[in-house]
Structure formats: C-alpha cells, structure tokens
Image (cartoon, rainbow, N blue to C red; front, side, top):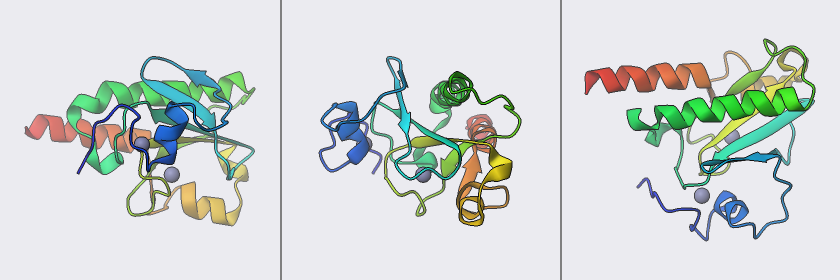
Amino acid sequence: MAAQNTGDNDECPFCLIVQSQNATEILMSDDELLCFRDVKPGAGHHYLVITKTHISNCKTLRSEHIPTVERMAKMGRNVLEKNKVRDLTDIRLGFHVPPFSSVPHLHLHALAPASKMNESSQRRYGQGSHWFITVEEALSQLRARGRIK
Ligand SMILES: [Zn+2]
Ligand SMILES: [Zn+2]
C-alpha cells in the first residue's frame, strides 16, 4: 500500500514535480525534500513541502519517519521566514488526514498568517478542522507509536 519508490510513480503529480517534468518553481530543496507554492493558496502565504520519495500520507508514516517529518517542519518554517513572514506564531504547519488529502503523496502545508485565513481555509487548515493535523500532533503520535513498539 505505501509504495516507497523514488519519485517514479507516473500517476502522482508530486512525483512528476520531483522528476521536474512539471514547470514548477522550486523554492527550496535538499537531498530529501522539495518546497513549492500551493497552486490554490489558502492564505497570504501557502507553501508545500514534499518528500522526494513517494510516501502516501500521514497515516502511512512510522516512527522511523520522525526525522523526515522534523525536517519538513523546519523547511516549512524556513520558507515562511524567507518570504518575510514576521510572526512565526501565527502560522499553520501540518498534513491533511486521508481521505481529505487532495494529492496522495505526503505534503506538509505551511500557511501564514493563520489568523487572516477565510472561512473555507479555516475549515481546511484551521484549528478544530477534522481534516488537518498539525506537524506537532503528527510527531507526538509517531513518538507514541514508537514507544509502544
Ligand atoms: Zn508521489
Ligand atoms: Zn493537503
């Protein structure tokens, strides 16, 4: 179910971005991650951080992915800072919970300013959204699962 191919899932739009077959402006990257703008911004700033490896979604993450998720969060914060977001407390960093993820390839949403998001963005990305899990929540779930094992 959780394919672990390296950006070679032809059906997946984000794997195509990893292969640079799509004309996407890459804002940041490292050996493991890529960052670009969300095509349908839900806030003044809205970026996506994806893994270069195809990971389906936040439910398929395991405790060994903790360092990856931490790096995704760091890149999300960095790209907001780089784009002059001054208040890093007024941001949303997190994942959509399946089946509410539009693209079935793990992507971290980084949004700012969170307090200025409109109603439909609040429903999608805001506090109390059942469709959205913050990166801190995702990490604490992964750490808890790691301890059980
Ligand atoms: Zn993919
Ligand atoms: Zn999403």
